[in-house]
Image (cartoon, rainbow, N blue to C red; front, side, top):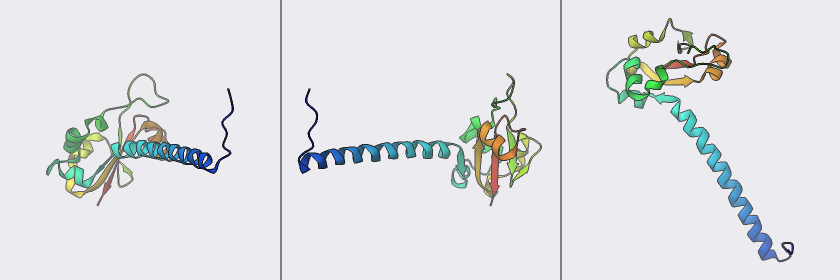
Length: 135
C-alpha cells in the first residue's frame, strides 16, 4: 500500500477542509447535547404559565412529573431519598410547600440531579433538589 501523498496544494487544502468540517461537526454535536440536557432540567416562567393559574406543584405534575419523584443519590442505600425544595435559596419543609406557590410569581424551576444538589447545597440532598427562583 502506498502512503497518501499530499504534495499538491489542492490535496492539502482538501484534507484541511475535511478535518476542519469534522471538528466543527463534533463540537456542535456535543454542545447541542449539553444544551438539551440543561433545558430539560429547567422550566421557564413561560412554560409554567401554559399550565394555567395553578400552583407550582400542579404545574410540575402537568409539565414534568419526574421532577417530583424521589431519586437515589450516589451515597444512599436502596431507598429513594426525597427531593429537597429551595425557594429563593431557602430550604423548604417539603415538596408539598410547592402547593402554596403560584406559577405567576415564579421566574423558573430547575431540577438538580443528586450529585449537583449535593455539590450546591450539601449532603442532605441525595434525592436531588428543586430550585425555584421567584420574580
